[in-house]
Amino acid sequence: MHIGIVYAALAYTAWGLFPLYFHQLAGIPALEVVVHRTVWSLVFVLGVLLVRRHWGWMRALQPRVLGAFALSALLLSGNWLTYVWAVQNQHVVDASLGYFILPLVNVALGCVFLRERPRPGQWLAVAVAAAGVLWLTWQTGRLPWIALVLALSFGFYGLLRKVASLGALEGLALETMLLAPLGLGALAWWSAQGQGVLVQGDASAVAWLLLAGPLTAIPLLLFAAGARRIPLTTLGILQYISPTLQFALGVWIFHEPFQMARLAGFGLIWAALGVYSVEGWLAAGRNRR
Image (cartoon, rainbow, N blue to C red; front, side):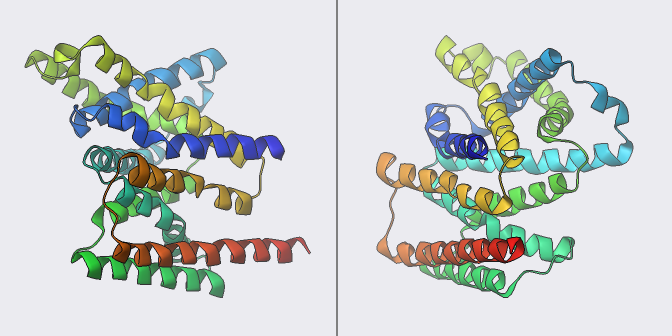
């Protein structure tokens, strides 16, 4: 169990530090960054599959599975594009909010689509978080759309992957395979037009983009290894490492404006996460007894 905690904590720490990486690519359009991330993730994952000689899962693919993973690939790419744009445009704090409310979005999606029955404490957490979102909307005069897009896109992505037949590595391989023709086509078009990093960029920019492959796949593999070894309640607590680090980077490293009025909205969401976490620990204890 202890090594499982280490694996999961490393995965969430890596995801929490992602703004530092994407900030290095601030001069490259977000769409181009996502295209490179897709292509080089596929190259890295195919390398891992080649080393492990793990290809049998491809023989079992059916049209229904391909359709489901095509949809999950679109959700994942949309999530990546929103996140990269947010980091490049000084909205890291807003992005962190999306991942703070993600666990509560998952509760709502499980209720609607999987017929799960949230416990009263979970409903209370969802209600408190909704109050926080409404407060932020009232303060700024608009919905916190970055946070909501990130939370909903990854929430629906997680829902699809929860009922999917493939594991983390195989699923990422299939998703990037489905996206790769679009990505390679875009890279070819930009290069033919004399545009894009591959034509206009220096060696440093290309090297940073090549890192997107391992930086995408390795945390995912660590997460999968950790999730198999620790209880879901422990995993639920560890997932707050990522948005906490993102929030800290946005406020103290990138010096994004954070008015005290917004702190009340964040406080409500943090309180909701506290209710959600404590309720989960108590429920797990009752189940063990």
